[in-house]
Image (tube, rainbow, N blue to C red; front, top):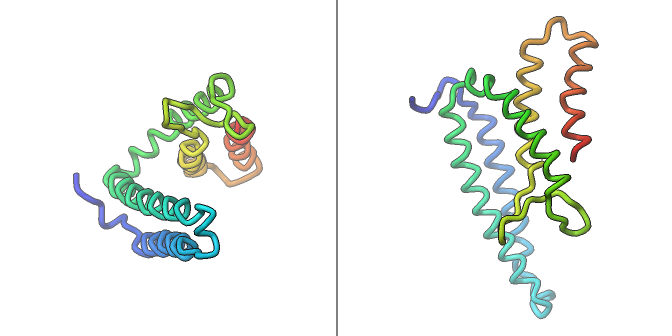
Length: 156
């Protein structure tokens, strides 16, 4: 199973690269601040830029892997992934770590994970699946979409 080039959206990919590059450029532009060098802020900005570049590489790798998965498979995973995301969001309210006055993370040693970040793309998949099979596009379909989105929103 190779990359599905017929489904590859070049314009979307290029727009994503531009946004990633713009974000990295903004972080680079604040990384050399002589007025803040004495306060130790320069080091923090450099860490932020290098962290952003690592996430860009990780995102592009994830994008490449995701592109290899057929659309029908994504569709079949939508509801189970949604159920898992909702369960994890509920679990973080009970077992999560409190950081900066909010209980939004799971902590595993020095690693912290914010389940809401995983819930975002899962919600998009579930909404796409729901609306893909919507009949007529009336108020019932809109109500179902709001209900589907509402549960994770309330939990977050």
